[in-house]
Length: 336
Ligand SMILES: Cc1cc2nc3c(=O)[nH]c(=O)nc-3n(C[C@H](O)[C@H](O)[C@H](O)COP(=O)(O)OP(=O)(O)OC[C@H]3O[C@@H](n4cnc5c(N)ncnc54)[C@H](O)[C@@H]3O)c2cc1C
Picture 1 (cartoon, rainbow, N blue to C red):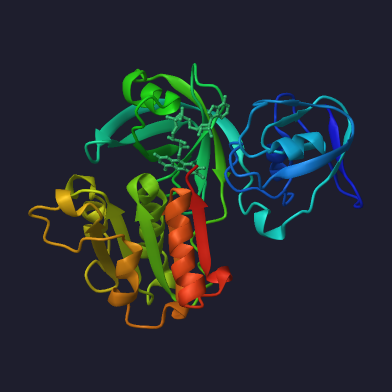
Picture 2 (cartoon, rainbow, N blue to C red):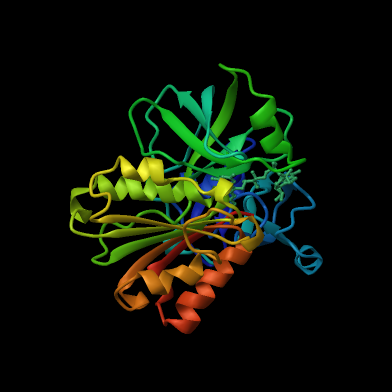
């Protein structure tokens, strides 16, 4: 089993055959830096000082030509072939609260959430263990590379994993999920990953902001908050944006949670004015609604965000630049 030694430290860890450097490090409880886990963001970049690695995805978009020339690799795509010495700056923030495990799960069914979002359920033998807001990496048949999907439910002993996935026209994983999965079909699921999980030690009220399929981890966070005694006194404000009224969803799940209407509030907006006929709510980008709906200064809240990178950037600009919210109070997953 190849060993990875971290330069300028005493730390080393073994990599199981086929396991990436990032996942092996996390399985040993080491805070290897990462964000997306699928080759897109570049956060898990490291420098290979000696040894050899194979790459799962040579063209990964998280690595520039310059990076490649400088001998840099992505931890999430690199498979060590022999003992390696690497230079990487560990990040305590990435040390896993729950060690990720790869297991087989079976597809058991789906339900439609909107015209293009579907909730898929998988069940595996052991406990589904994760924090509200985390994601899993799914290996799907005939799909090159794993895909990240956030859990829409809560940890449970039944081994049940629920994902709300938006169909991408021509997307390889989503086409397989929507059109090619037979009931009972088994896939590999590796989880949990991600740092945008519900903080139970914060004394602040909570704000969740998402668009499209970004709703999945926010639903998990809202359910986690509603069931956690430590957060009973806190309020949660759930903001959800879609392009048209047909994209709006999520309120049905929140309505069934304790505190709905008193400690749990749902706000939705649609962004396409031409498609908003009959829509009784606000029209505009969802983050534009946030400041007008919240009573306190925004720096008084704990924020959770999920959605495409441009949406996360727009919300960060609003929170950090305009409202001086400390970045330690903003937790997000960018859906690359
Ligand atoms: C942290 C995180 C959480 C996410 N959570 C959700 C969620 O809850 N719901 C949801 O709908 N979506 C979520 N996504 C997006 C999801 O992972 C997919 O990107 C999306 O479903 C499109 O996948 P696709 O295969 O259909 O599209 P494609 O366009 O075929 O592929 C999408 C991405 O896969 C990568 N890729 C392409 N080829 C390869 C290859 N050969 N090897 C490795 N990777 C490759 C590329 O980054 C590409 O942009 C999340 C993404 C991230 C990073």
